[in-house]
Structures are given as C-alpha cells and as structure tokens.
Image (cartoon, rainbow, N blue to C red; front, side, top):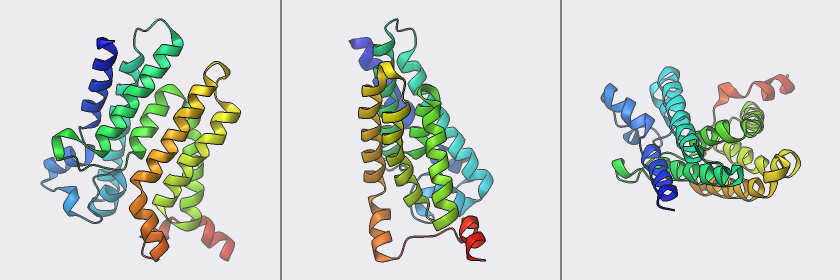
Length: 211
C-alpha cells in the first residue's frame, strides 16, 4: 500500500512540473501574465508562438505519460496495474492543474490526459484528437473542442475499451470528462456570454462549406 501511495504521489509531483512555466522561465516570461493567464499549451501557443506552444504540449504529455507508466510498472496483476497507473496519471493531471511548485496555478489538464491515454489506451488519444480537430476546424473554439473530446471518451469506452477492463475505463472516462468540463468552466461562461476566443484561421472546414 505504501508503495502504491508513493507512485501516486510521484505522479502528482511529476504533473506539478509545468511545461509552460519551466520553458517560460528560460525565455524570461511567466505565461500566467500573458493572454488568458492560463499556464497551458493553448495560451502558450497563442501568446508565444507555435514552436513554444508545441514544446509545452509535448512536455506536458510526456510528464503524464511517464507518471502513468511508472504507476503500473512491475505490477504482476494486470487489473491492479491498470488501476494504479490510472490513479498515478490522474494525480499527474491534478498536479498539472494545481502544481505544487507554482502556487497551485497551472493549466487545464488536457495534455496530461492525453499523456495518460497514450500509455494506457492509445485509441482514446485518437478519439480525442479526431473530435478536437473536427470541432476546432468548424467552430474555432479550443475549449469547446476539449470538452467534447473528453465527453466522446465515454461512448468510446462503452463500445471499444478492452473487455476485461471495460468497467474500469467507463468509470475513468466519466471522471475524465467531468474533470475537463470542470477545468474549462470559464470557457463555458465565455461561450454563454459570446466572449470566448476563437481561432478563425483554424476554421478550415467551416470556410470550405461556406464557399
């Protein structure tokens, strides 16, 4: 039990290493003073350019992937290994949103979720990427795309998750969807108010069909 808790704690500590704040320090900027004030990849891309945003995104995916991998490493029981890996990954996502080292002000957790899924259920990454891409290229709203992508994991788990662990994945995806909606609650408020930032250049499908 103590070893299990140590893996979960390590996941949180890994998640607390913020890619945007660490890379921003090398650049001499605090991303939380730029744009929306969020320490995630979208704000990094919007305020510092695509290269910086890509670096932040890859870093945040990798740290959560590492946490999930360590969580299940060396555990003989596959079911226990999966559950512990999910818990360690969840801790990494929590660390990303509420980082210990940065005053508990971090990102919104989508990159961390992708990192966990990349290790434990790569098909989930494909589902999220497809939905996010579809929503982004039609509406231009990253936050909306992130929430719908998280929600799409639930029916995907019901239909396609590996049978022995399907119940675990259904519970996990419900929690993932709720987590993403919670961290994007300010986006929901701005969508209702009509003030949400929109990436017009990303609306390629919308422009195609409007022609």
